[in-house]
Amino acid sequence: MGSLAFAFGAASGSSPVWDLHRLVAEANLLFMERAGGETDDVFAEPDGIVWKEVDPISGGLARWSCPRSSWMAFAEGTEPIERCEHHGLFRRWRDRRASSVE
Image 1 (tube, rainbow, N blue to C red):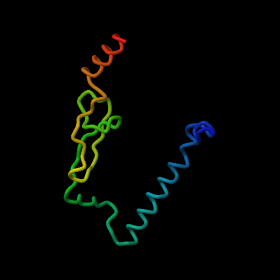
Image 2 (image 1 turned 60 degrees about the vertical axis):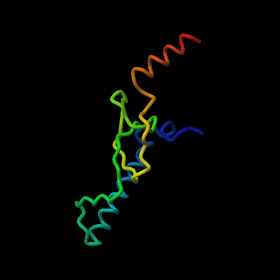
Image 3 (image 1 turned 90 degrees about the horizontal axis):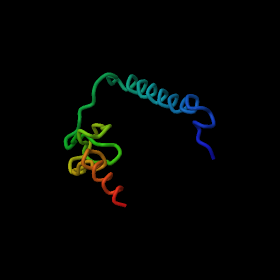
Image 4 (image 1 turned 90 degrees about the vertical axis):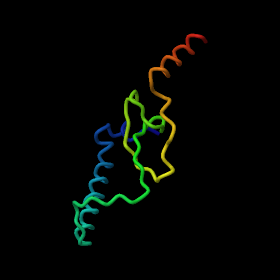
């Protein structure tokens, strides 16, 4: 079974996803207007939320050497505490050294 992107081409294969995203956004806007809520207000952040910069590959706290990172919200006490060990100069040196020994 092939992927949708292969069957329909990358652009047209992703089109249904973006159409659904647009419809959900429009439905949310309509709901907020009918409910009498302001559509451009920012929701207040609840207590007990902690924001951490996380490496999406390892799930650990991002280091300066991580090529990508995202700020993510966690319930206090569930946030990652270990740093990313997937990226970094020492990791690359250690991996290269281990592969040359084998």
